[in-house]
Image 1 (cartoon, rainbow, N blue to C red):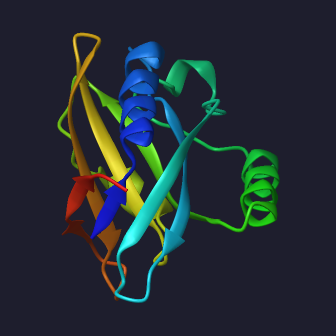
Image 2: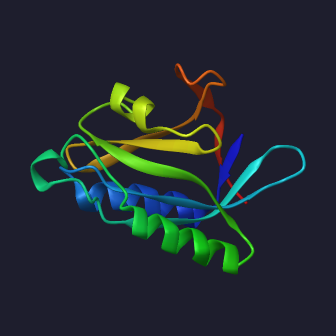
Length: 142
């Protein structure tokens, strides 16, 4: 289960709408508890570093941005526990490209943005063998 603080939900939805018709992306920062629940305390928007002509259907987080934000999270006693990105005018379901870029220890939140309005967020985890994404329960709260 992944639990997003209300402010994190707001940030993820707003970023998807702001970057529409391109994919918006960012990090999910928080901690995992002893019961395996992932608590996201903050969503951190980052620029989509993909070349401009591909931003409407692909995202890329620049390695330097990721390293900087991982250090910042750890300095605050938290971790990067996942990533989010938006799918303009598509369902909140990971694409084949998303699967090829995924890492097994993270959660992935995908937000569907239709006509400029965020309408659904779903969470995913990479399967143990890396062949697919499995749904992860996504709830709002702390």
